[in-house]
Image (cartoon, rainbow, N blue to C red; front, side):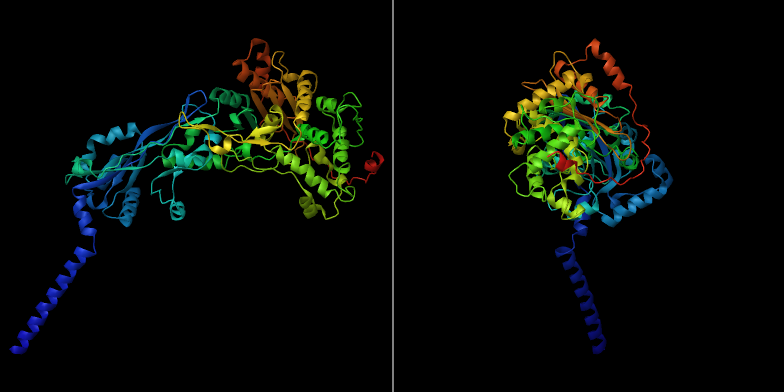
Length: 625
């Protein structure tokens, strides 16, 4: 009996120890039951801030917000009596309901997860009155982007929900599952200013999930902070007009206010309606992949990512460098149009520097470039042109070519101005200038971006300096741009040569290769370019600024596969300049506007490929020294 009594006592003691241990664990270590108990009466609701709006330079709203509703689910509180009826009510397939709820349970049985994303106000209104029939499901107000204008998609960018990979790498620890973040354009670059700050509310609910009031009179609540409003430098009406002119064309228009570096318009064509990437995440995903795989690459921002040969527009930079280096002279330098060097078009010959810009003579710049490289302070430049080429390149970099300008958009490309190391790697250490001479007229290995060419026009307009082009002129309605967009950058070229080149560019439009761009009472200074394109017809290029003195606008236009610069790019730039300065296109110029608007260059036939033939070596360089 004593032995049985002992066994019973040990058994009871063991049971007591187990219960005591379990109670100790629950009290000290396991918060699950406490969370479940608290969630019966208290819910933590995140209040998402309004993302900052974006205005154009004249105060017009170009990016706004509209409310949407996320339906949140707490798996522990949700009881579904009829799965078919439940699925029908929320317009979700039964198998999708099972997957969503299982994922929610895997995350947490007691914490809320998203059940349905971004219901419109109209969709939410249809189910609002019956939501209390489904304890465990409650709404959470969010906002998505809304666009009053169907313009400027590439520059504005888009926002998307953060994914698991991003959250794992997020060092700021700001973002949470379901948050939106800027993925491209202004939305990405200015994300820290636009996103605002989340707020939190604690509310008491009954067993059916109906909110009964705030917890402890809102003692622990925090208010959301609205994101900052951004004032863009873009004139949305000029932007829309540029997009109309580029309809059925591929290419880009970039216009800058020279004095401030503020971008007045940035057109990349073809483009898309920015609303396609805003709203219901399922629709947005479908639209994104359609745009991504479209042959015209509408997501590709040609203004800052497309690398083109500058063609004859490059001659203004060559003239500036030649004059600065004393390789050219405004009075005595004269070269004939020797077409055995390179093809050209009919114009007077010989030409001085001024007329070489006006008539865009190719042989002139072949000979001028040779003089720049061979007639300078570097020794043995004939046998070793590398140091002289590097010196020439430094001038071009100071003009904003061949490098990232640092504009306020992500994914800007640098372009390419080749140097000695580049040619040694690709053509051997003993490369010679005649092998690369096509760079003299902006062909060959040279690649520039439309933003760089518009900035070059601004440098000439300012007579030797520029402010980094930027799209946001003010953070906050009465604020300022970021500090880097107020600093002047000076060219290595002497200022006095810019006015000479600017006056020659005026005659390009008044009586040279860009006469179609001429406006009698607005002195436009421009330069045409026709860039060879191995994939099809030549690209039509034009850079310009206006007026000649106290300029208000600098612009570059690229139209792909459109032929001569004076045929398409120059008329487009002329119309943009007049629209900005005058505010309208007068009747006597409507014919030109009609010509551009009706032009369709999307289906231009490719040129037949020419058979490759070896060029015979020539001694023309030594013969013309």
